[in-house]
Length: 342
Image 1: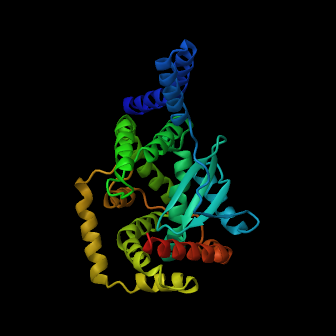
Image 2 (image 1 turned 60 degrees about the vertical axis):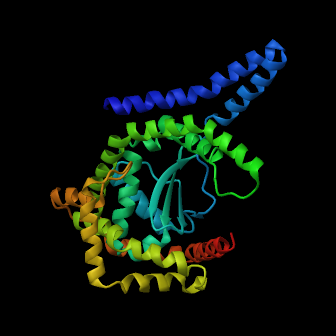
Image 3 (image 1 turned 90 degrees about the vertical axis):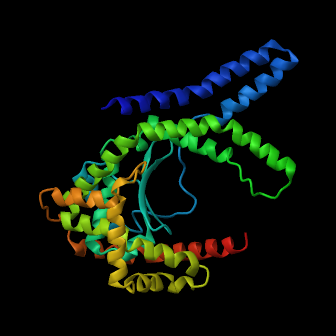
């Protein structure tokens, strides 16, 4: 554990202490029973409420699947979890993002796996194993972002940041803009703390990504892991470009078929251009993810590993996702249509 990792825990603990500190100050000021002290005490109590420890809740835009609804999917994830040394998932859900993620929710830190169905759709069976293994590995590789101390501190700060955000283009009147500007000014320390935590976790977060790739390659195989990472460079941009204009006009029943057809139709010249552009990301700095091309190079340098899970085991899962995938398509379409009228 490096100094930056330790420092991130120190900063996170300080964030958690802000609430009790404001609470004590507020109670003390209220006990003084003067006009100024009463006003200052109320403000301090308000800050205590705002900076209180928060834990993530289940996201509202997901379609959860129970073990009864998707036994093959849960069995697949259980096998992957056992192989990467991670706890088994409590809930698996689909959403409309071209991505996949794991997170924890609630005070009991229950594990949630979110599979973006558009991403799932454009991956091969072995690439699906690779993305699931990579994400599950984050539960077992010591990534501080998923820990109780740092994870909840960062979540609390992000929630507070959302409260203090200010949109200068909002046209609800001068009074609203002035109040919003003052709120944004009060939120500057929040932004600073988020930046400090992100910088302190920079190296550990990037190491966690490389470690998750390595653990995932042990389960899915080296070639499948490289191919999955390549898909983020070559295929996911097409899926995102398709969804942004098309989700509002395509019928929900046709959305996924049209998406897959659109991704498949991308010319090979464009695919190669995207790979070349990805190679130029070597010098870019990303807070949590190293450049995809560097991750692919690192996996290629690992001893060649064969996948431990057969493609047939993954293909059994598809039928279990159909109903939830249709609900996701409807929610994606409704969200896209709603955005047209904002």
